[in-house]
Length: 231
Image 1 (cartoon, rainbow, N blue to C red):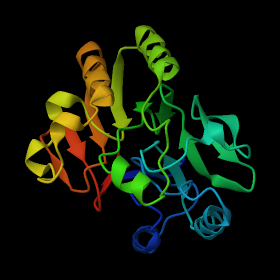
Image 2 (cartoon, one colour; image 1 turned 30 degrees about the vertical axis):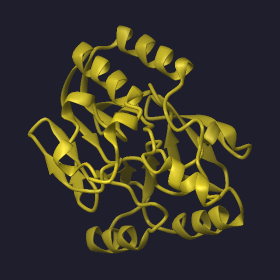
Image 3 (cartoon, rainbow, N blue to C red; image 1 turned 180 degrees about the vertical axis):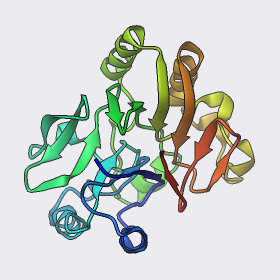
């Protein structure tokens, strides 16, 4: 297996990923985890197919956490479930190097145990709905996903890495909150669930995206435009 990298949301804009691949001379043995909102399954029409056709030519394997600006693969008929690095992922035969993590799966990537829990609430939900833009009702983990995650972490409580889209509620970067968003109206269900997980398990590092900035406090790491190689 090649190298293992992490980065933040791309929202369908993969120009910087193309530059990254050139800079690091990557191959499809290398893995780049996008921490949610890859933007690959947003339009649900030929625009998604054209994007996937383009990025599948990149010399890298994309491993995507579920975000809140994209449809879940289980709602898209072309996706199948396959075994990958001791866990299960969603994949399409036409684009074998574009993979989506399944929430609650535990992967072994370059000898690192990785727990993945995607999803988040969209603070721009009403804005998108008013304009007829796509909003996805399954953006947050549902009861079945939460039950599966809980089942998984009763079997294994120690992890090298946790990968998510948003973060546990105690780690929220409140200094980055948008001033025009009324936080009392923001659904924090996923953040509270992630906090319960964080309190229950042991882990070395937790990586997340969602907030469109780069920041960390030593144990929790927020990524957006930056990249992190997991050694």
